[in-house]
Length: 124
Image 1 (cartoon, rainbow, N blue to C red):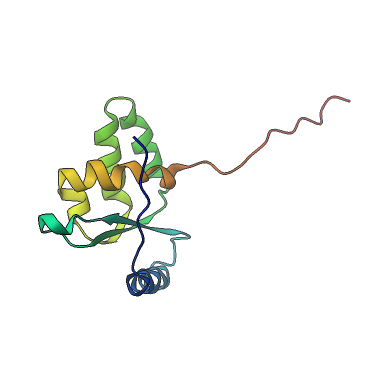
Image 2 (cartoon, rainbow, N blue to C red):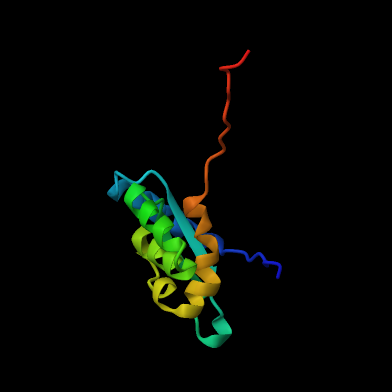
């Protein structure tokens, strides 16, 4: 199924950007914060947007994620989300639908690899 793009209200976007700056200032050991915005279903009584401010995992968190990912990927993703959540709408962690169909598919950004290349200059 193709993912549809949604537009974020510019005023809400400014709120999110300011919150990221605030969280970076308050968490000196955090290098990057990824705000993950999930569109709510207003017709069903939800808020227009839910946002989770996520930090990148440290070695301990990443190791725990990798170990549990082999046993149960959903539980591993759920634990990763709890461990990396800095602030935001906790419903993204506690509401199964918001987590499974909103937050979880975007958590891969927290564990993506950097571009890297093995360069072998040992042979002429």
